[in-house]
Image (tube, rainbow, N blue to C red; front, side, top):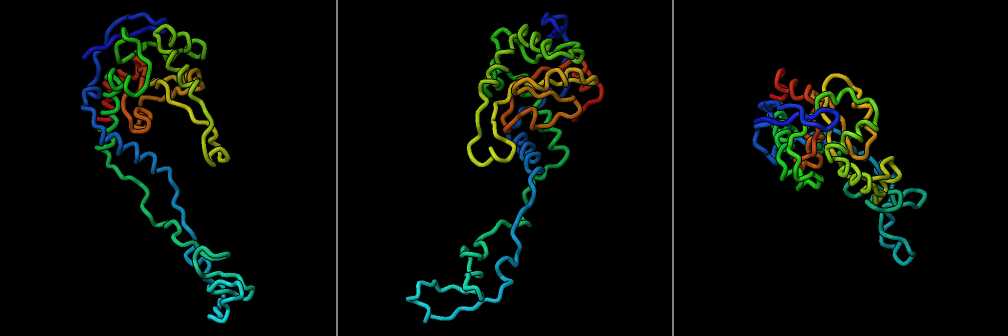
Length: 257
């Protein structure tokens, strides 16, 4: 299976044989497990104090309190209900359990297979279009660019994307930026934005600093690839630009095999 190689001017300059990683069948179930494993690993267990609302000395004066506008609940010396759940000063009824298992565990072989499967999905044009990316009809996948690591200016990356007709996908991500609903606005995640293309490089990091600020664009070293960046939201088929060095490193070092 061969693919075209582009230079930084957007011209086809040769062909390259794709490594074995791109021949993996697309397994949606494995990709979803790997993505959930990454997301749940970020979660922090939380729960209430098991003795919350149970430390105060309480009393219940009995049925003679009826008619005095007082509920039949245990009360402390300050006449505050403290032991019954969901009362003023009381404990919660069903608080979160800190011992609950939140992590989706996955072994190494499954994780590597999921990464290979997500990589294989990036060269299936139907899956890329289904995911919502804008891909020209005459453009063949995968997109491999020789020397993309050397680009050190954002304007140079923009010009390259315009020449290979992928800049429209970045503009689409920019227009999708919107305010988040709910309390997340107060917690450092005010905005939501769609994902655009992924750039995979190897070695020099010039392209990382040049492209990281483009809307919706992610830039990742080939050895740091995972299922989440290749298939955000567990939906495979992300529009991806590979550097020639990254493809050669996949083949020579047999990464994720």
